[in-house]
Structures are given as structure tokens and as C-alpha cells.
Length: 145
Image 1 (cartoon, helix red, strand yellow):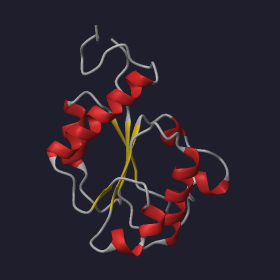
Image 2: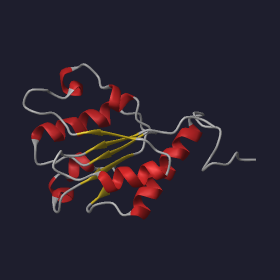
Image 3: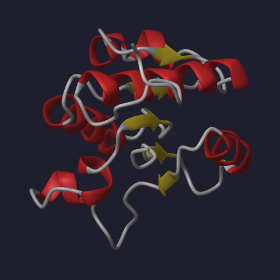
């Protein structure tokens, strides 16, 4: 069996992401959390350094506040740098899907905290993308015939 597919969860430090992490971990997807840049540490993507968390992710759930210009710029960089076959979901606050429609165009958006069913579907997309890239010889724990 191949290595589990890591999912990057970008979420603000004041958001309790424990339920999302626990659920995805039970599906055998380790989760790496990024709380975004702070006053002392800029996002490495925005200063041209690249980011190991992003480059090693097999799927990304982006839940940073799009009302912050830096967070919008990070999402723009994701659109430029993350391969199109890496599943990316954006979680927005009420109304942000309309306010930032141009930025979000073409991206799957959750306008609410994702449900277990939505997280399960996202994890399945990550596994399918890995399989299609040849990074996994099994699809949902089984070898296709």
C-alpha cells in the first residue's frame, strides 16, 4: 500500500479545526495545518520562497478569511502554483462567494463549514487524483481490475 495522501488545511488560529483533522485522519489522510502568515512571518509563497506544506499536499482546504488582502493573494498564488489535479476547496464566510466571485471563479466553494459527507467526498477526490497521477496503485483501498 502506498503512503497516505496528506491534506493541507489552511485555517485561522482561532478556528477549532480538531473535528476536521480527526475526521480526515480517520480516513487515513494526515492533515497539516497552516494558520497563514502573521505580523512577523510572511507567507513564503508571497516572498518567492515556495512552501513545502503546499508543494507536498495532495489536497488543500483553504479556510482563511478572504476579506484580508494577504489571504486573497495567497489564494491567487495557489491558483498559479498548485497543479490543477490537486483538489482545492475554499471555505468562505457568508457573502464572500459573491464579493470575491472573480477570485473564486472555477474553484469549488463551501459557503458553510464542511459536513462529514463533504469531507469524505473531498478525501475520495484526493485519492482518485493520486490514482490518476499514478501515485497510488489502489483506489479506495482496492486494486482496480
